[in-house]
Image 1: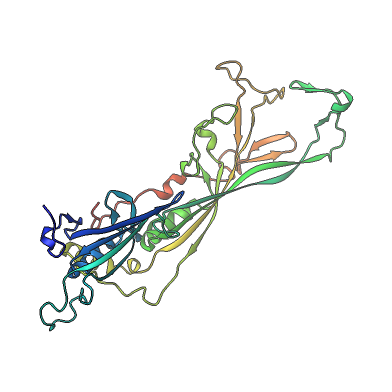
Image 2 (image 1 turned 90 degrees about the vertical axis):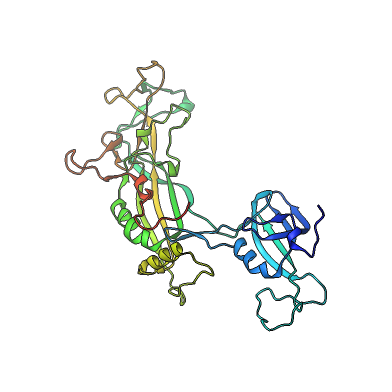
Amino acid sequence: MATDPYNPSTWRLTTAGGIPYRILDVSGSSEQDTTSVTEVYLVQATSILQFIIESFPPPLVVNGIPFYRNRRLPGLPNLSTRRISWERFIDGLPIDPFQTDTVAPAKTYPDLARVTIEYSNVREPDENSFLHISGNVAGEFLHVALPKATTVNEEAGESSSSGGASGNPNTRTTLSAAQLVPEIEWTIRWDQVGRKFFKETLLPRLREALGKVNSKPWPLLFQEGERNGRVAVEPQQWAETLLFVGFTFEETFQVNALIPLEPIEESERDKIKREKLEADQDAKLPPVRLEMKFLEKRVEDYLRDSTTGQIVISKVDDKTKVTVVYGHNHIWNDDQGGWRKVYVSGKLRSLYEHYDFNKLFEPVTDSGVEDDA
C-alpha cells in the first residue's frame, strides 16, 4: 500500500513510543573508530515535543548517578541520538509545534514538520562514565647493607654458583647497594558518586580501610592468578601487596542545585519516588567526585633455604623453583640479608592491618522504592 506524505495514518513506521513518521532521507559517514548517521523524518508538528522527550528521556539515576538513555538508531543500536532539529515541511507555511497560537484560524499551521536526527557513537568526556582506573609504574630505591656479600671478578675468571661464590669475601661492614623495589601507584576515580551513598555507606568503608593492606586478591586492580614466567601466581600471594594510602573528596555546589525540575509527565509511582527523594536533603545535592590512591608493592623472589641459602625446589615435580612474594608487611633485614615479615608486638599484630578491598564496592540493598529495571 502506497503511503500519502500528507496523511500520517498511512505511514508504516512508528517510534517505540508510537509516534508515526516517514523517512525522507538518510546519510552518514564512518571513520576508523567513529560512525555518524543523519536521518530526516516527516512527522506531525504537534508530535515534536513528544519525539524530543522520547529521544532524550530522563536519565536513570542509581545512587544519585545519572545514566543517560538516548534514543538509538533503528537497525544500528550502538548509535545514539546526539542532536535534533526541526523545520516546516511545506514552503511558505509556518508550523506551531507547541500550539502557542490557540486562536489561529484553521489550516494556518500545517501539522507536518521536517525533523533531522543526528546519531553518533562518539560520547562526550565522562558521559556515562563509572570508574576511571590508572596506574603509574614506579619504584623505590632501597639502600641495603651487605655485610655478608661476596664480590666476584668475572672478567678475571672468577665465577659464582647457586651453592656459593668463589671470590673475595666482603670485609667492610659499610658496603651497601641500591635495590629497586617495584611499585605501582594506582588511582581509582569515581566522578559521580551519589552524596547519600557516599555519606552513609562509602565514607565509613573508606575510613575503615584507610592505612590497611588487602587481605585478599582484588580483581579490580587485576590481582588474579596468572603465569609470570616462573610459576603460576597463587591467590594468597596477592595478599598484603596493596596499601590504601588515601583519597580525595570533591563537592561542588551550584546556585540552582536545590531547585527540583518537575518532569513534564509524571505517574503516581514516580511522584511518590520524587517526593521521597526530595524529603532527603542529601538526595537533593549533586553527586560528589572521589579519587582513591593505592600503592602496590610486590617483590617477587625465589624461596631460599634459611640454612644453606639454596633455592627451594617444589616437592610436587622436583624441578619447579618455589616463588615467594613480599608485600607491605615485609622489610629488608640487613642482618639476615633478605626480606622478613614484621610484627609490631610478638606475632599479635602485623605492621599493617588487613582489609578486604572487595567490600568497598559491595552493593547496598535499597529498602525504599526500587527503580524499574
